Length: 537
Image (cartoon, rainbow, N blue to C red; front, top):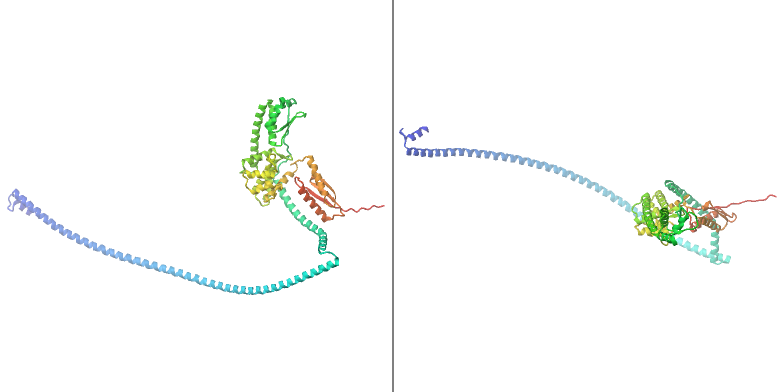
């Protein structure tokens, strides 16, 4: 190549070449080089294409081999899965066949049992049919015998009427009279036996429950009385309280609604009023006026209004404290205020609010012993006397007034309303809680020291007890003892036997319970004795 170039450069002669010749030579060389490059590129490209085709063929062959292998593996896996599924289905089919065979055996047994029952029922129906026929025959025979007996009784009655000379009505009346006379003692014995047994059991249980309740709720009891008199330092203060021409005392009575009694009793002025709240306002206001010393209508009205507000706050506080003590919520504010007023109310010397709290706890304990709702019983007992807070302002007894007031101010429980209205027997008891409240009320009122009575009422009760006892036939003496808690009755032994004595005691106790009002209970004791007296001469 170098030689050729050299020759081209020298023009083949070995001498120097001219510029045009050099250009021509360069062009020839360039063309020759391009042809040579094309030839070499073709050769190389041919070789590359052949190699790529061979490689592609090899890749395709390998891919086909892998695809055939994968297809074989998938086919094997599918055949294996199909075999497993077929085995599982065969097992399930075998289980279903076993269950069907078991069901067929059970159905066969049931069919046999039903067949036997049908045979048994058929036998029973035949027996019943035969028994029915026999019963029909017996009924026919009995009817014939009854008709024959009626006919014979009619004949005997007619025959007896002819013999005795009495009409049928007269004979019937005489027979009933003899039966009544002969049965009286038997009835008395039966009543005595049954009543004694029931009373003994009931008294034991009631005594147990009552004693338990009283012991659990051990509270002090003292008789109370609302203050009615105001002490004054000197008799000159009476004139200042009356004022010029009575203007001070009139202003005081008008502001408080009470009556002020100024008499010759030294050192005391009496305040009289049925409303114990107004009385409390008047007493405290009068005490403050006496201590202050300024007595004129304006000052009186100012002090009375101030004391009234304080008393009202005390009333509300007392009602809230009582409701909190018995653990009762949801009470209407008016009901709380009414209960608070009862801290100034007394009944036979017993504070009514304290009495209501005690009845609430006693009712709860008795109810719980009887398996009832203690909380509901406590609510019934707490509100049972609420009517006493306003009975001096309304007509009617405090049970009805209290029931209407409680219903008006949101009390909806029928047991509570019935206990309020029926704890004195004014209306029939509709729940068990009403008699429980009645029992707790009697226990609270009858406890020693809980109440006191005036001498007139005490004497009247003793006389009533003796009069009721003396009204009974065969009674010769009657004496009320133990402050009217017991009446001893003496009967004529010649006219009254032991069983009749028991009936007399029962009748007296019933009349006392129906006709008299008393706290607690009254025992009736009938005594019958036979005395054999002989005189030696």
